[in-house]
Image 1: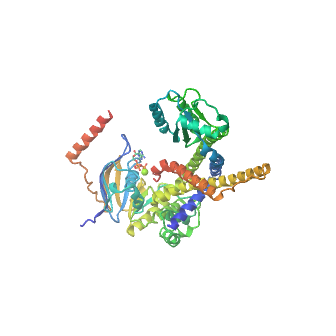
Image 2: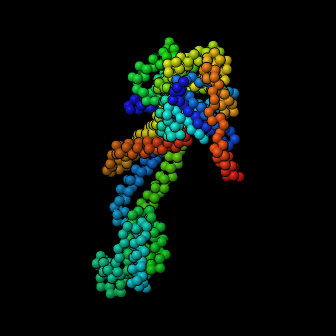
Image 3: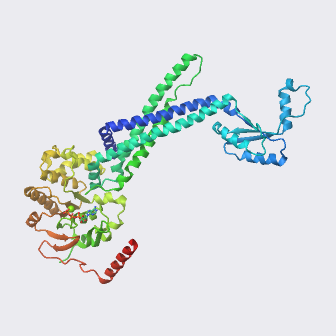
Length: 296
Length: 259
Ligand SMILES: Nc1ncnc2c1ncn2[C@@H]1O[C@H](COP(=O)(O)OP(=O)(O)OP(=O)(O)O)[C@@H](O)[C@H]1O
Ligand SMILES: [Mg+2]
């Protein structure tokens, strides 16, 4: 068993050396892809942490129109509860809202004997800030909702965090996908080149009765190694960028508190994703040639 | 005379590469264990196809092939490597790795079938000795004559100690002197018990060796002359009428399907 593994690894490294430049291109592109994904994940996580409290407190108020009947209110509650991305819905009658307001703002309301101006109000919480705009648009169109300013939400700060996070998601998605695809194509090409370069070896192996695993595992391992090195490289670059950013922040604000670079976690995830990706790409690359027989 | 149980049996084997090209047409034959058989015939007559059928590089369209009691039709893709270890394949072009020395070429093949370093160390010299090339173990293929290269290819075919050797034009790239040397080597391996099939159109070298000779033509067996020079009856030469009918209807139905 160990003997077979040794043989296959030796074959793998011969190929990696033979395709130096293709390997270099595949590894660096994969590393860039993983770096971008990693960096954006970092920024996203930091932002999410910063926004954590805000997000937890994040609420949207929906005001029911004045002429609504009890049935209308029940109906609206059902529909709000059923909406995608809404995590909780609580209801307060206009009397409750008014009492609460009076209690919280005694100076404004003291001695004021006016009729209750508050509408029945729903308070919504969200699973994900990014969807708030879309949901607000939907709710505004519901007939039971007060026609003007029926939906009230988002402070500017909340708004910014929501936008920043969805922008990051978008940017990370697009950039990461493009780079990942490029890296994947390069890994695929390298493996195809290896298969071409190893035509003779593969033919001999099939002739003398090597198992499919023995013949094709070196190519799979080559892809895995490329992805793995890409992941490690990405970790190094990410660590450097992180350290640099921390220094900048401490120069600007010496009192700021920052968490250290999570090295172990980053190495694990980036090299795991890299290796998995390399595995997938090389697997696709050998799928077709594997079916063909080479010996004569 | 009691016939030994056949080692290789072809029963009415057809190989169709596509609708128009057929590699073998209704080939039936028996080969006993320990026999030496020349397959000859013009180019395109189906010699290579017959050998490829044995190593399962080419699927059989119709009929049955049995090797050492095993119907090749029942050999799964997973089992093919193990089937190939039962036969040594010797290609016309030697198929040696030019960047590896003679002994490394053999060692590489042994490692590729999962043998350990220790096994390789002890067995390579023995195998090179068998084909009389041990003295050139440290040479690169480019430093060898064609005959020597072919001996390395034969050495590689012996790594699994197969009971059967399949050689497709082993002398095709060699001059007459080296051809004789290689055929003599194959004969000597045969004398130690290995069944050997050699495809060739090198009629000159065949005649020196008095061996069974199967003459092929357009995918069919034209004649089968035994060692003693007896023309053997070609089994199933006349297809039985009812099967003929069956084939006819099958052909018709495929034709109809295509129309
Ligand atoms: N892979 C293939 N696809 C289609 N047709 C093929 C294929 N291999 C062989 N043939 C055809 O099958 C027939 C028999 O070919 P085969 O290679 O068995 O002949 P051969 O006797 O070995 O000839 P040669 O002496 O030239 O090696 C030929 O007509 C050939 O063109
Ligand atoms: Mg041929």
